[in-house]
Length: 151
Length: 177
Image (cartoon, rainbow over all chains, first blue to last red):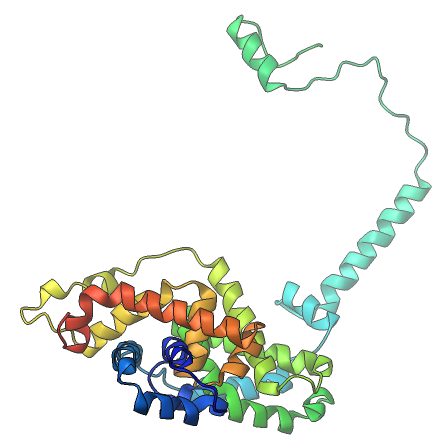
């Protein structure tokens, strides 16, 4: 690519830094040629190199052999799909036990519910006690009890 | 990848050998601490093993892996409460040293803080291109942006770093401020 301009070199320096090894390969040679012939780019190169030096002050994190071993064990331990999700919810023992318990409880609930006689709903005329914070505050302000409020 | 999708542990372990060290470094630079980075890598490889069948040849394996790791890192960063490390605060005070020249450990802490303060996409772009030496096209693919947008993220991130560290340049790299 031959259409690399000084402005494009400035963009490369701003974005990728002063090390041409990080620049896009397709533009690298042309950009280096522009840099070699344009002394006006020296300040841009220096500024980019300075940021590179600052970034390089952060050391490379060390590898972790223990993590690598643990990652390689994943196929031996990881199951897939719903069994895994169930196991994550119940880490104490085999997940089928609590699952079986839940199913049994559901069956008993259905059987009891179906076999019970009908129970009428609450009489609408019954007093329903409830708390309304505004009414409570008003009642308290007037010295009345706010525990039972009849609208 | 097709072998991993079929449940081949040998192929999966080759993927671990090939990418796990660099992925750990990438994650550590994104989340800022070792323990969280190890969790990110663990979660990422677990996701790869479980969902390898969903990989399509259109995406490079390493790009896919880095995308998964980036998302896992983002999840951790979102869940994390903002904290101030008292040790780091002490480390970044150059007035403690008579020669005002920071040790390499202190310099690293200052740069680490400045990097952590960047918006996540700018930080990720810099980590991918500067530290991981990924090409602009690869980094753009991982971030899901165009190369032009990546270059903008990089430039803004580097300018912000330079501005943040401007007053400390002499302490950090020994030159004149």
